[in-house]
Length: 327
Image 1 (cartoon, rainbow, N blue to C red):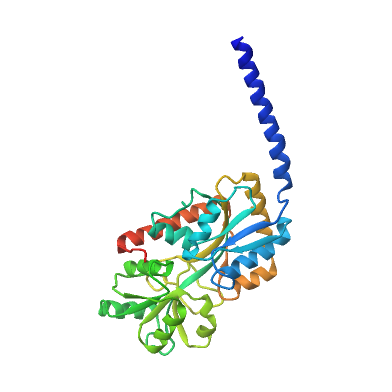
Image 2 (cartoon, rainbow, N blue to C red):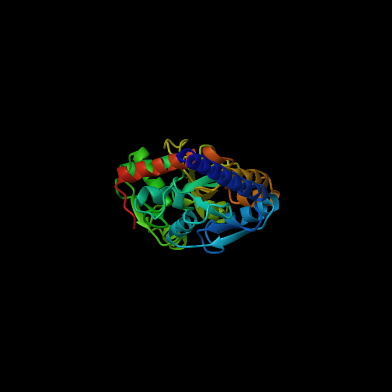
């Protein structure tokens, strides 16, 4: 009798498994059957919203469904990340991941309501925007080497503006200070507008931030870009050296990519990844991504995941060494 019950349980389990496979197989094969939602942690028109909308438009052409941008602004993108971490892992909710909510915030805020990388499946890195060390266009300082020499000669007297305490720019500049062995005072501002006003007014020595939104002022000579944080020079700025070329061994960027909630089926994320590869060939997308000196990226899947883990480690090391705290 016991043997019959065991056989019945095995048969029932096998039938249930077969039924699940029969259900899941066609569902995965048909993906996507409805519009895909891309959660962006910026308000419309702000920050990385342009990158999110651009990939959404291009991906809509290659994935077989409309990709709709859902703006969930606030807390530097952390609200968006939390919402996606808790979303159903069916491939219909994605996030525009970025170095803020997937990198610097993770290193700086140990009690975030989501975990990276545990709560997500990395799909693709899309674009990187370098940080830049900038001074007023009328400043006597011409190079990053000259700036650091001045900072070393006058410890604590040189200053740099950023767009807020605990942001990625502050942490990357902390890396610069640590590598160059200089003491430069941080002056945080609420946004680039007030920071630039004080830069032009001579209240701060420099501004450290992603420079791409300021390309017009750089090209016009109002801002002097001393160095960029990429490994190689930017093609559109061939005369601007990297930090490494300036004797400062720091390579960090502000990046954007796509991720899905943990548990999203591999077949689905692979399908999205293939669609992203095709979308990244879109001429209009490349025009937007390259317009301000940003650089498109091609890290996919595991390679993107490994990049995120290393990015967090880099931020965490700087945070711990600099004793930085969240605002």
